[in-house]
Amino acid sequence: MTQDRITRLEEMLAYQANTIEELNDVVTRQQADIDRMARQLEMLMKRAAQQEADETPGVPLADQVPPHW
Image (cartoon, rainbow, N blue to C red):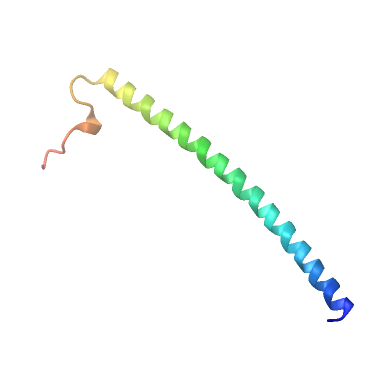
């Protein structure tokens, strides 16, 4: 291999390593966002279920069997 070709390969490798690191950062941020949204969704679902239970007597609507069953 010539020195020029080795230099080009090293540059490509450095560029790819940088790209992988940037992609890893993006994926890490996205996972943190997904985790945060999942916690918020769970909290909202609990809040909605509690509100429904407070407003309607008897069995909550989500737990009722549809009339055609």
